Length: 253
Image 1 (cartoon, one colour):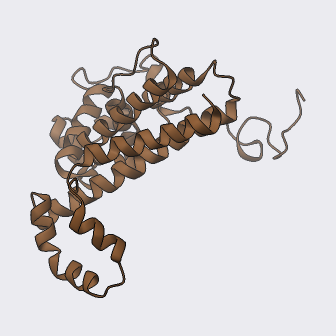
Image 2 (cartoon, rainbow, N blue to C red; image 1 turned 45 degrees about the vertical axis):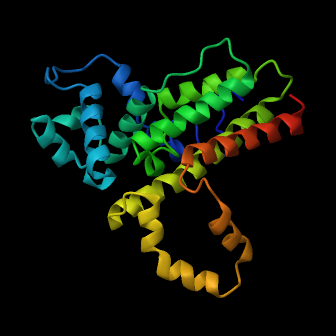
């Protein structure tokens, strides 16, 4: 009730009646600047430089000091916008999701969900570090993707919980499938393998021993009969369509 503490014993001012929580990164960035800031620096420029660094060298290479050096600014300059690496990563995640073209409003739910899945895969392959970085970020451009997907599911007679379950099911497939794809690509790069054939040759001793045990006949059949081992795009799209078929059949939509 108004004027009363909540169930946790707080009154809206933070834990145990303390100071209110600090404003989020996004709230701060939308406020007018309280003091002059370096003209050459902006959230977009910071994010673009950090994304370029992560794309080239991995997320571990992104530090506030390295970023300042790449931007040609004082080491503390970026702290006018972000409090540290966690907020910097959130800014990066938001930046790359801003590159993602969302489906327009004329498409049906399945076309929208499929397009979101395909475009998310393209984003993650372009920026492999997002496999590790974007699961728990809350950013405006990420929310725009969620909003578009939920809007497409509106009007189908589904309740709010079911709509979110559908979105999260498709999202879980996309992140799981692309996470494995990115992981394989990074492993191959680390070992100097450029093609699937080179990877199979490099793994041949382990694979030969495993298959010769006779314990894995179904896997052996796949290895000897499959013709699309290196067609990750086909495999992803088939899996995505299977997920969407299952959603449609289960919910009758």
